[in-house]
Length: 365
Length: 74
Image 1 (tube, each protein chain N blue to C red):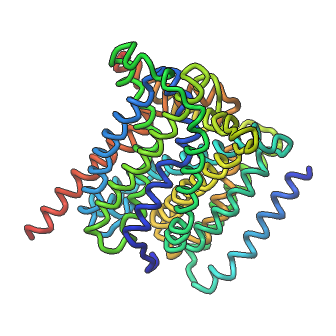
Image 2: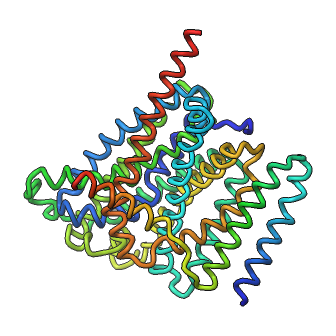
Image 3: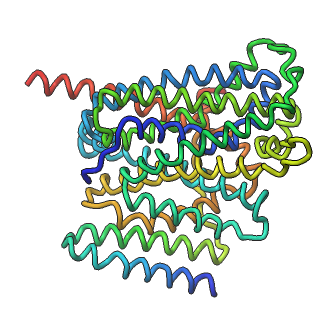
């Protein structure tokens, strides 16, 4: 589509930001509700499963030979079945982007700017995302490079300043309820950042030096998973499993607890900044992937004209997606895992098989 | 009334912003795809702003997986 490339390092940063974004906001609560004090163990389990998934995606990206997911599916399955295949994939990305937008909107309206209508928060946030997607993947990569040091500094600052509040007793007894709840709960983190990483197959071909890309992806997923583990651990250590499960945004509560000698207080906005940076990048990747995907699906020359109309649709979708938090929780708890599993595991597996057959055929002739 | 008016203003602004670039590229297909997507987005926005029931894709997804689960017997 366009001759833009990013370096493997920038790709790794994008993967890290993508992994942390939005999962940092919504993951600790259900984890602590189900696995209690062992939630951090299930994060470790799911990061391991996530690395396996990334391994699979890397294999697909390599066998696609410089094609995006959409192009590869039409290449492997022909015009009709490939199109059908792409429709499901695109709908998945688009809905996911709308849900991520709603996550940040919900957070802003409940915690920071309660008087502003939800629509306007969404429109303002999306305008910046559209500007980024307009400029292309190269700019996204570079800005990821700029924001990563900020993210690391803020995380480090938060961890250091909350250390006095930590009490190890909150983690005891380790595995008090047996291993089963830990294994069961791990599907939350597998579903929320790792299966969604299938989106990154849309920007995989833009990375130059494709040999290093798989390494960068694995490393990025590992680091992002590490941050998720750190955040979950902090929530458990500071608040304890019960309070973590009760709060809608436990990490924000952790930030409110920061108190250095009664002098340095009210630092929860640091956490909000971390969220905004990471969710911004997650949303920009999703938005870019969906608009480029739709442009490739319709065989358009340029994806840019689609950005603004798609944004209008996304604002509406993010508003109507769920009427209240209860609906969202049942959706995420009951349906999201199977929905993400269909699109994040089964679809890529079929595509992988198709690509393998197609590549073998074209080698023989 | 006002939200609908605002949406129409935004739509026409987007249309005038993008149309010259699309015309310069000289692709009729592109213009058609763009217009259809923009029109869909506008009508959905107006329906939402008037408080009508816009079909929610999440409902369909949920009922789809529920029926699948009931077939396998979970």
